[in-house]
Amino acid sequence: MKRMILTGTMLLTAALLSGGEFITASAPGDFIGGGKASISNGETTVNGRAVLYSKRKLDIDTKKRYRLSGEFKAGAGSRNGDYFRFGVYPATNNSQIQAVCINIVPGTDTELAADCNAADTVIKLKDASKWKSGPLCVAAFDTDPSGRLSDLPNFNVSKTGAKSLVNKNGIWELTLKHPCGKNFPAGTTVREHRAGWSVIYAGTPRQLLTPEWAKIEVIIEPGEVPSASIRNWWKGTAKAGLVVESAGNGLMFRNLKLEAVPGK
Image (tube, helix red, strand yellow):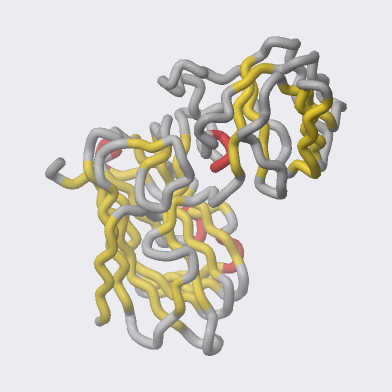
């Protein structure tokens, strides 16, 4: 059996065991999106494109080390070039943390120069000289500009994408691709965030299938970061669940596990 040891990412699957010290999952019913999956002799097969999210999540102490591991191979119907993704999705106690909620652009703290309404597609900012418009641009509202980043994860974010950024007589106008969706008064603190992965991937975001079982194992070191890293816990993580994405046919997996391990 091939073995890959990687440092710093995570996993996804489903079933809370033994006091919250680890989770594992295999049965289709363990997952949201498991309709294309079947299980036989402890080996799960996913037929077609699908993303499986574990229904259960592990309580995470970001001061501890965690190990994410699983075994994968190409089954019947797989084609050359088919791949999969394997990782964990970070969450607060109530909500999944999307990249836009924590993926800050340093140095972009500013304030609204005018009221912002949910239907607006133009946001007026006092100083956006370090902002950049584009498909990944997001405005995060009611931020903490002190440097402590106590607002993270920040769910008060605009929809993703900005068409343009123009300085008009000292007031910066950010034109969004979609209505802002948020209501905030002038003077509200604002920061630029960027869209990105919504999963902490084990290894790389694209793992090719092999005809033999290959083990992927990663260690997530203690700590948390204000960015959509694929090597660290995201700031504000309190729970994590398993994720498996099939981008082809015949993906097989077994022995998925996310667990706390000794060491610092």
